[in-house]
Image 1 (cartoon, rainbow, N blue to C red):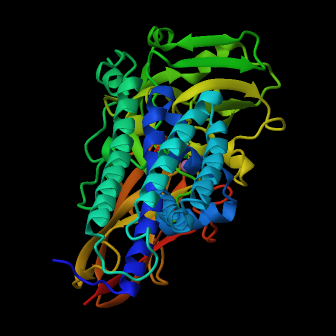
Image 2: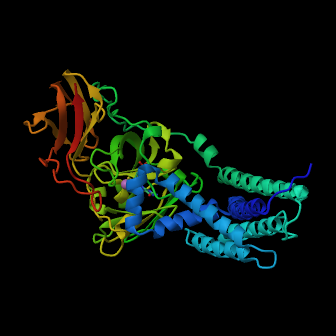
Image 3: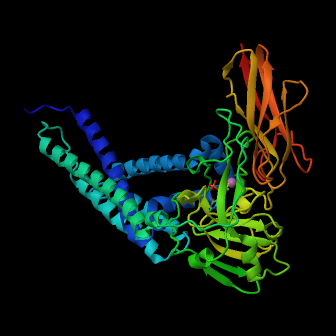
Length: 520
Ligand SMILES: Nc1nc2c(c(=O)[nH]1)N[C@H]1C(S)=C(S)[C@@H](COP(=O)(O)O)O[C@H]1N2
Ligand SMILES: [Mo]
């Protein structure tokens, strides 16, 4: 049966078909780029190269905005944003492409130049990093040209009885095949990339080192056991994750090396076997992110196994005027840690295990730093491969270049975990509970107050160590009404948690955590 399709409808269909062919062409560049990147270097992937460079070049206000708006979902938000941009640019390319005027193809070329530039900015980039984009571009342009040539109804622009069923079907088949090929290439690229890196297997074969210097046992009561409150040890899969890596770096133990150089008497390079030949220690240490807002979730506590950073520094022989350890991760992130802190006897370690597991890939496999008392951005370098001994007046680490502080001890903090905000409650006795931290100083007391009442001391769980957080509870005979509860901690140096509200940048947020309770 033939139908008569009116001209506006046909024009509209053609418009959509053009836009869709452009989107499929752009997806082909990315999908095939991912596939070609697999055997070269996962880091050369066009999509992730553009994402990483965007993040690295983003002005501080944009970063702040992203963290405020999306929190720890900032990576998915970035990927969604990039995908939307790709759809829009692809659609534009498809709309302007004509068989004789390949303007859409030219747009793909320009986009690819941006991607090649981004790939060249990556650590260890050489000319081969351009190949995934070039290969993807060739496929993308071919797809765009092919689909464009097969757009239904292009042969005759004048109104006619629509007998274009066959060309239309041909277009749909071609478009669907190209889209499926782009998706398959992208998925295959990701999968092959991981297999080639061998990272999953490497981690599965990892044997935990035998430790004689064990962490002391966690006494009963360290966990207050109030439902909904922070557990003393944070399981790996719920431990907060913060880093600039859009793709988790894939570094095997076989490829791992740490090069120690700069202001030292002897340059040293140690590999995995050297490291494993040393004497490990096991410690429980609480990590905190400087970006944590008052009351926020960016803190976690784990049992780590690792090797004393001080011993390695002593082996290299640090010059007396070197005051910074500039650590570089395999993906280019840097942290700058005061040498003094690393040598003052605290348990600063190169960790290889987290809660009796090899480090999870996201938490720095195979080797990361853990330094009690300092925020992560100046100390906790994950996937660490390079140590340069230098000076704070000579070098700046990743976040310090972007306006954050250079030496950042963790601020004394406390937070209310339960009851949940605005949870309906009945008058009578209730338990308010939470956690408090002041790593490497230790928590002396936690106080709670309701409204403008006096501060009342909370009951503290036993102190495990000054390097870990300390849970607290406070029993309250709640009267009917709306109440604002506030908490503040005092550390063992006598510092009371700062009342004034300040944002995380540059050295960590301050302020007392409050929570509103409705009792009726
Ligand atoms: N390579 C690398 N290491 C890094 C970071 C990073 O972006 N890249 N972020 C640091 C920051 S800001 C923090 S708070 C901690 C977080 O460690 P986690 O993700 O294991 O909790 O890692 C630190 N180490
Ligand atoms: Mo952080």
